[in-house]
Image (cartoon, rainbow, N blue to C red; front, side, top):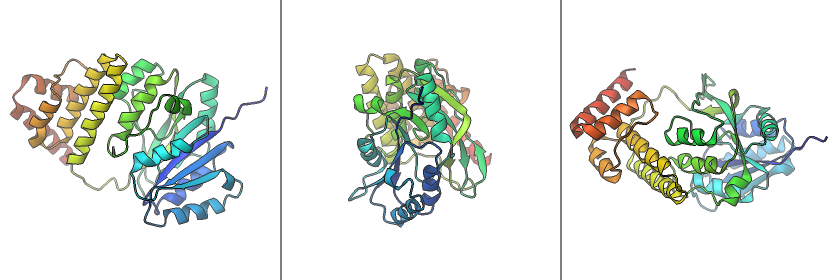
Length: 325
């Protein structure tokens, strides 16, 4: 029997990554798997990213006919760039790669083999985290279950990674069900779309024991405030409302409750305490027992039973501990 080699579409949005794009593209064009189309979307990048991309492609003449470079006339954001790439994807499967990251050379071949052997819809590969000086930190993606409902619940509860990069996904799941990224949603965009993809999947394969994707995290020693910006808060709330509507329409009220309570807890943990009252008004649902880490459960319990000042004090103490540690 001839081994089947379905086409894989690699989707790569590009904007202001001239420092990283060469290593990314090289890792893609060196893949051991043959039947690949590469779709790069220039989201009106103002730097030399596209020139560098073209230079790298020229070094791989055997792959040049597999490469498509699409252009946005103006910058429209990550969600729009991914939608453009998806619209032009002709592969049976897609994999999304961020333009500052890399794939291991055998990554796509490994995932396709697993996808076919298991007749799956999603293959979740493992990943390693790197600083820009290539110092390696092992990626952690717990909560992966090959049982769809269990995995979906873990994603909603944020017990499992919601990033969409580095996963091999059946293209029809998105195209036949009208699943798209929401333009303008620049924070939590993967948390909005990935649960919908998992909901429609029939079988998921866990390959997280294999490090197939290299995720670059930048300067791990830099300090940034733990507080969410106003726009990030708005994006999270928009995501909560969008996913709530999605699951209500599909009679999964259990997931709606988990979604709203878990993300209310997250908003408390990462927002300025002066915004707590507003969070309580926007998401009035109260904590019920959830399978989440103790530190998150405490926040939910305080929200339900304690005065607001105690919740603020607990979050402030936790933030001080994080700064020291």
